[in-house]
Length: 126
Image (cartoon, rainbow, N blue to C red; front, side, top):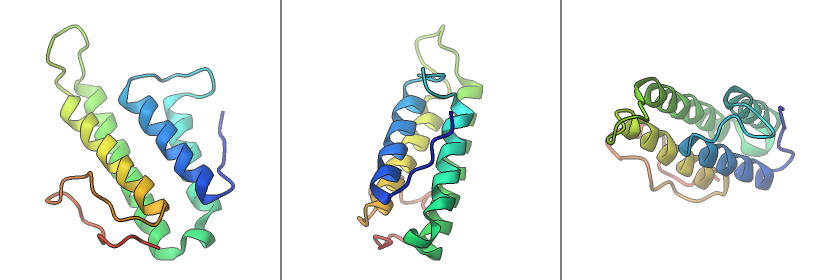
């Protein structure tokens, strides 16, 4: 099910929900699939574009695409039958970037994604 956030607070909550489910391999949930979760985020960002402002909206769209790429790559490498999960580092990067997205939405500076990979302004985005 696609759910579109109606406020920045709801957007922050939906980013956290998506991050928790992606990081724990919980998809599909009772309410949505993995792809529906990412589509909900995309539609929510578009819906709240004016409230976010153009620069913050563009930054969050790019961060979401990069985060999803990390998760997708991690899942492609993942093999749950062995002790060391090959894709875990990619999944961890996706999760850290999602944490920073939540910070940006809340008007706070990002902190989680490795600085050497970070390519967006480190301001609070507010």
